[in-house]
Length: 84
Image (cartoon, rainbow, N blue to C red; front, side, top):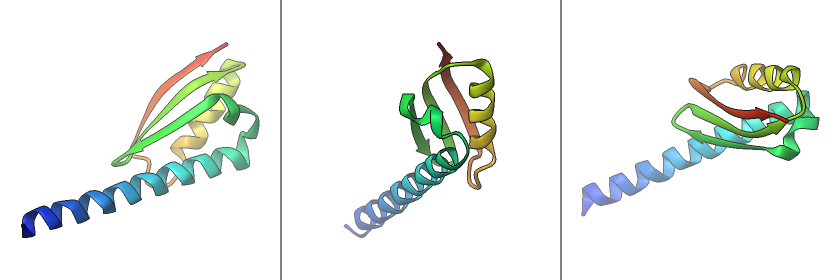
């Protein structure tokens, strides 16, 4: 029972870290690349951030990925952005 409680607590802490990283990436993009946010989804898991969606140009994609890489806590960035 104690291991189960510890695992549950650890899982909640990890989810909190994931949610915090996702929020920080979103806020950074909102501050620097607001026009691309409407067509993007951001997922975070243990320092890996996945950016999914569409942007209007290769330059917008490059800027978006550059912004994501500058957020503290992003260890790995997975690009699933299409240029429309």
